[in-house]
Image (tube, rainbow over all chains, first blue to last red; front, side):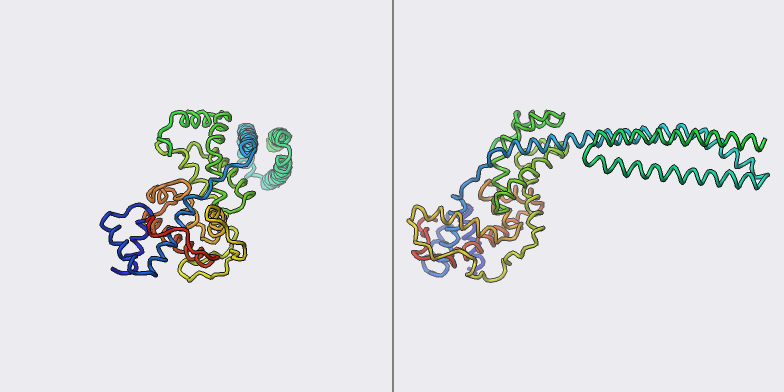
Length: 185
Length: 199
């Protein structure tokens, strides 16, 4: 039998998986070979030490610390869900309000084709307004993100300002579009 | 090992999934020793083990929906803890001893101390084994801990570590050999504590 197979039998002996026949064989081999016997004794010693190594108990207050972290995580999750809901509502409200404005803008663009001067003014005004809106949204979102790290509730108030800001721009656009419409008429 | 399914544990898990933090606290109280011991034996450092145990429970809480109730909750929890500890060890970027190379005798196991009594020898060796375990690569260490401290079968460990049963057998085989060589090199005097009669 090769050394490899012999060592395989030693591992099986440690795991208690050795058949009586193999056990007898291993014992007789180890009785004849001092080097392999030393090797097996070394493995057996490791096995015994590992089997007798103590089970470490959790330190006091570990459970309390875990539950505090769980409570924190749950709170953060709730705040994040509220913020997501606020953002979704904001986008929905603004999209709804923008619909008539976009329809009016399209109408103006289509009718302004006849008068290039008015068409250019309409497009310029719309681009300028959109740039201002995007800049304002970017600032509000950055502020909300910064505040959320320390005070999630205040961050939600800042998020609530987003639809208000957008609504005021929408009103402004509606007024301006009305002026262009009367100009073209 | 506890018989599975355990209706009390299942009830706590279901209630925790509904947001009942007290039910989750019961799970924490029940399994904190097991999780902490696993983390300590794999990481070898108490403060880090405590932090890892906290993280393991937190991950379990966040992933309760993914827990398969046909399997043991303790095994699932220990799998999370073991994977987390292995990740931590990998991030340490230390060099572990290769199991294919001969083991050096200079592993910091002092042989200058006075020779202990036979009864105290195993305790001393237990501390030495923790020091030796720290020399093993993460996957080997984890397999040794799950086998010896938790009495998992090769098949169960393979399932937990997402590998094959033969790979786990091979890891245990080589880890034992390496630990034996390390112990042998650190042997002060008086010879090993076992004899062939105990086979």
